[in-house]
Length: 110
Image 1 (tube, one colour):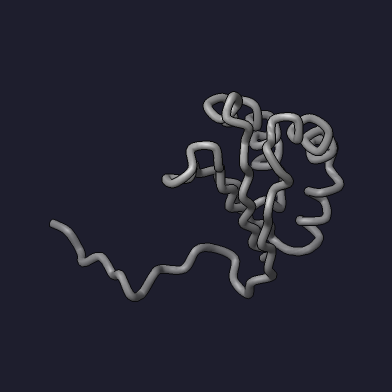
Image 2 (image 1 turned 180 degrees about the vertical axis):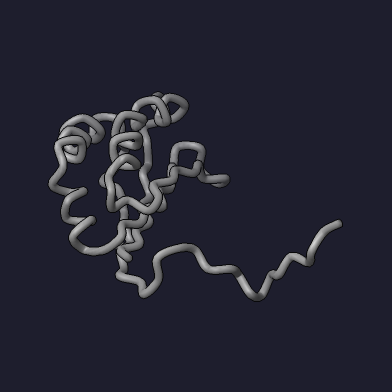
């Protein structure tokens, strides 16, 4: 899979609205057949920073994503709400889902 983490620094005046602003892009991406997940989190240290964790089945699915109409729309519309160009880490990973964190096993409850 292609595993991507991106940091988006949003202008302070748009930080509260970012989930709504990015909503159409998020929904369209999640509907792509090759999208495994597309999840936003807000930084605990910087309320203007959102972290996007996304994964696509393979390079073809990643290519379909960046060539989609909703990606092109996001390229045009989202930068006006950002304080800087988003930063990204993108890697091919030999798995297709999340693995358990073996060093922090949760015992059975109940």
